[in-house]
Length: 481
Image: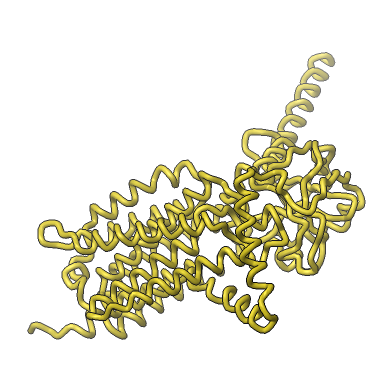
């Protein structure tokens, strides 16, 4: 009897211990690596979704928390590490003391502004660089980092964690030319010659040109697509608006695929002294140049329809943007040439589709076209860890569905919606942009931010196709009664 009782108690203890351990493991949802050096700097990444700073880490899947932390660090930074111990548990995550298995390659100088500081890590070979991660740095904890942290409570612990962390060895160098191809190094020489030409001019002229080239870079910013939408709605109705959306999707998908496929490091990644502006991700092709050729090409085509042949509207901004990107050290000459081809090709496709018709209706307003665009992007969205593909796919799919249910908008698609169309489209985009930005700043969950931004892409199509024309035409179209 006593033997059976002891056996029962022993088995009960083992079962409770196993259950407790299981529950403890289930409570751990995330793991991260704390990698530091002897100078008190910490390895951090800048996230693509919310543009904030955090140490490498992520969700625990089927592996152990320590294995998950090591795996995420390698994927995000390209640095192989080992976890030597547990530093702290915070909420449902574990932060491990991790040590790099080989010296971490960093630039040997640092600026006072940590945003462009030179303690940057050569991480462009990392699997998730340009996909989930914008940039990788070795940074000393400070108030600026705390304000820009994805997890402020975590960053607040850094000074304390540095006291017990095991420092990793750094491989410091003035540039990363030894990690780049011979062609890339040669290509940076063109950037340097252009910069030296500008900066050897008389000081007043040099300063003026430098400031001007910095400013005109904005003429190729992707935000121009969104600024063009209300103008298109006001001057050319839904059809012209659809052209802007299609060219934006084409430029975004082609440039992002090119960047991820070729994985060309930016000039200032290789030679940090070339940097004159902030940029992240890969270089080839130039998204700014592609955007400029597409946006200003559309603007020129609209002006041309009025009988004016002002070709300078297209050529001047695009040339200035291309020159500025090379001068600022963020793109090679080959990048801007490729960007020009992408932008011009995307523009040519949209102009062709705009003039093509099927069964008496513009092909640009056929739902099947937009379904085809969504299906074309779907493989990229499924295989590439880059949210832009998902957003473009959902935007095209929602555009197609909206065309299916918006008969009146399609019938009046070429009717300019004037001031009302401009204001209604601007109002909707303003609300959606505010929501996307707010959620990105408020949430620390990548999944929540991804879902929110994807929802905004869908809502944008619905607003432009189904709601803005209805609101504008309701008060502007005369009654037939």
